[in-house]
Image (cartoon, rainbow, N blue to C red; front, side, top):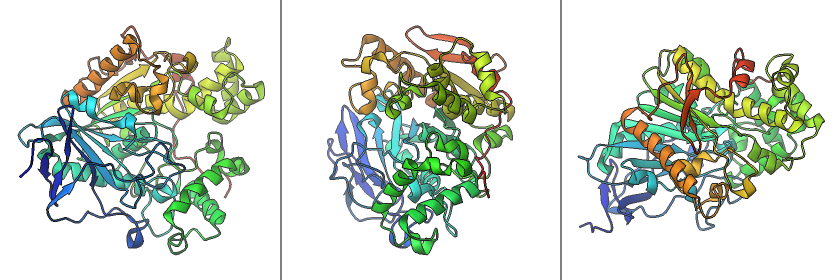
Amino acid sequence: MQSESEPEVRTVVGVLRGGREAGLAVFRGIPYAEPPVGGLRFAAPQPGRGWEGARPAVAYGPPPPQPGAFGMSPQSVGDDWLTLNVWTPAPDPAARLPVMVWIPGGGYLVGCSGLPEYDGGHLAGSGTVVVTLNYRLGFEGFGEIDGVPANRGLLDQVAALEWVRDNIRAFGGDPDRVTVFGQSAGGGSVAALLAMPRAAGLFRRVVAQSIPGTFFSPDLAADIAAACAAELGVRPTLADLSTVAPARLPAVGQAISARILQWRERWGRITHRPIPFAPVVDGDVLPATPWRALADGAARDVELLVGHTRDEHRLFSLLDGVLGQVTPEQAETALRMLAPGTDGSTRYREAFPDATDEQLYELVNADWLFRMPSLHLADAQLAGGGRAYLYELTWPAPGLGGSLGACHGLDVPLVFSNLTSGQPAMLIGDPPTPAAQELSGQIRGAWTAFAANGDPGWPSYDAGRSTRVFDERPAVVAYPEETSRRLWRDHTFAALPLLVG
């Protein structure tokens, strides 16, 4: 018999016993697929096996292999990487609450659902069932290997969504009102899911926050995989790579990233960031880029909320040690590599005549990597006959001396209302100001309203380019970054090629 403090839910494969926190029933570390090790290494995820009795679901599952601990407890070890977590106000099949499924970001290299910034308590307290999940990262999830499925990390996400479809009603969720949301690589994953036939029908709505424009061609992904295998002293084959322990692979991605400039003539733009792993447009798991797929109508029946922050790149400038120190040479290199068209550098300088070298560096990096890919996804959704809502976060965060503005990642603590826990909370400032709390309430309210009924509270993006600007003063305006939009208007975010065969 279950107790009030230890709620139990019967899933398709067994009973789970969770806990209660702040009036919510919480279930952590739920396996949605078998551990992808041994004979399942580098394979598509396989359905999890059942169990007898009530399985405790009170601790997060171990994070997938990745560089460093990334804030995780050293006790979180093991190979059961493919787990998810559920927060629910009412674990009752009759509740039929909207469901929000979070896909963490981290450059397709790092991240996991157990980080404190992803605690779903505040979101679930707004009347939704919240699910967060782990998926394979780095080479384990995205390395190109002959004879095995590409985009295994994306296939993991599909498997988690299939688990949601089959089980979420028992947790009080409505399987016909599932919204998938994610930021950065999570946003890129969400965009990829829109283009994947395997994911069709598994969700009704999508929130894509700061989508990276980096999707790889098979040739580029294979060349990167060959470099990774050479770093390990093996061939890029299933037989050879299977002999490499999962814990060793993350260091390879780090090593390649550290020396990525030596491949600039072959790999091109991704050497600027650096970005060694991303979804691969392989023609099977991912038949086309999200922009192409949406323009062709692949997601016309899915409602889309998409946007970005204003100062997307400033956080990376801080991490790279160039904030406030960008040289004219660095600015020109960024413009030459990233700006669209053969005369992109000149066009940027003419379009922003008063911009400093640092501002030009920030603008072109932000536009290439996050801002224009996010905007273009809204355009593609309209072209394909679907509906989209657009936003931009412009609130200048006071944390870290206020030097980062509305930087990449600022939306995460605001969406989850976790303003004092997790690394992104440093952007908010301590203690959070009333303005931060008010803004977080607005964003959380918009996201949960969209999940519930498809309307975040402002006009849809259309010919007038209606955009909700999140700042201390709420506003709906025409898309604010019009100069950048015009510069990138004719650019196509295609799968990135291998430059030298």
